[in-house]
Length: 290
Image (cartoon, rainbow, N blue to C red; front, side, top):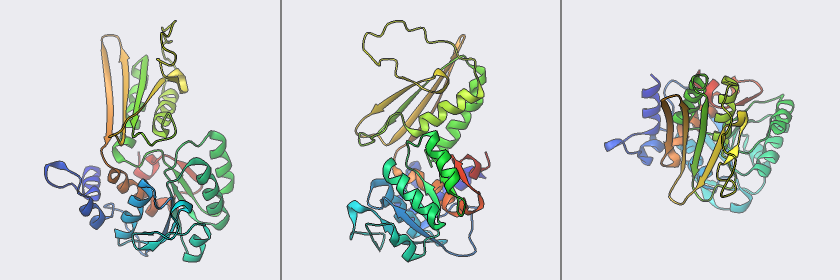
């Protein structure tokens, strides 16, 4: 059922290629319905992810794109909506769910606005510290918030598979690869993956390296001492490999997002379900029943 859900939501054309037009027409996640149209606003509406999210929301018959906010793109038109500079446009439009694809400092302010105005939030911005999440848990008392480092269904499954495999291996490393415009490293997906693996197993072998010929060659040490390596390269979108090793064998778990449409089924699902998940949720897993 999940496979059918994802395939139909993404819109896979001939030879398995993602068809953006099909995605925009379909715009829904099978099994998720709404009795009334949900009024949606998008923060960061003129960015790469924001523009894609606006188009996906506008094409979904269960959703209505009623506001778009981006200080750097004010007065532009995205998916038929004129972009505003300030979040008050969300209140004027009667937004029920706000989607945030911005940068960390802007997202903090946007989420504070959502909490103050009782607007649900679906957040794809990464880089939040535990202190940020704790503060949001205290702030979101009138509405709900989902923070997901990755909305691709395959990436969510990759993290779950890595968590399941962790207790059976003594060594592991994570390589995350992204486009050359991504400003934070490691990615939120990599940090969440390492955190979940570390929580699943505390028995990790120590790093045998005693001398780095080039500083930083072993990457950064994440949760549980799991090393994380970040690659920034033109031509990429979002990719991650989890490498696990034990005596005589290794396991590689990899996920690739080749275009930003891969995130939209997860975003649409989150918009439709955030009202049913009280407080602050981190990760899309709960929404998928994982």
